[in-house]
Image 1: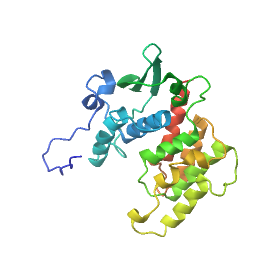
Image 2: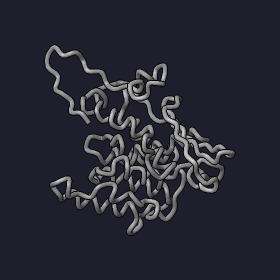
Image 3: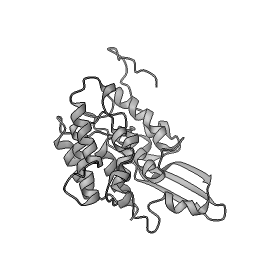
Image 4: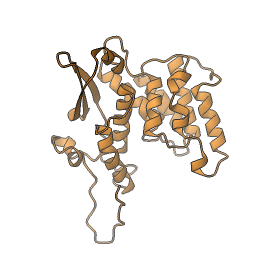
Length: 262
């Protein structure tokens, strides 16, 4: 990533990187929308939840660098009302005759990337939670997506609170299960509060990479789940905000995808 140069008096205002710069084929308002950190987080969460990984050459990879550069330059984020575009839908379809899976990613209701690959037909149903009987992207899957989108972030009290809220909603149990993902997150936040160097702190990836295996139950994320998790994260953050690629963002992305695929 190229380093941003400090602006000198008299310099022309720097324009943020827009969707049209990243995806020259997009049209209309979307082409002129700045790429936001929330966009990259939503797309990355969707890819991970649907496929178990981020796509090489996919939309998340394409916009992640642009979003980071826009944020580092101070062109998006707090105090910059640029309008937010997030991943509205990530869909996966199969062409039976050629035994191919086609992954289509959209932002602002426009196709931004498409990928096709040959796969055994039997494996398709396990990769798309929106197929009949799939039920949608679960809260546990959203937590595991956070391990990728914000995996290097040290666990803080706001993260632990959001993870606890997510576990409660996934399992239906109000108590924290010993050895569960919420208990692990709380322990990490407690330890991190005593550590001075970020490199020595426990990261979100350490806590969430196998989140589903630590949940006694799991279910598809809903809008109410997203609101509850976001509220818990905000109440425990010193600035009353949520992390743009954190737990609340991932659960919100999952809930939005589930709603759009009803």
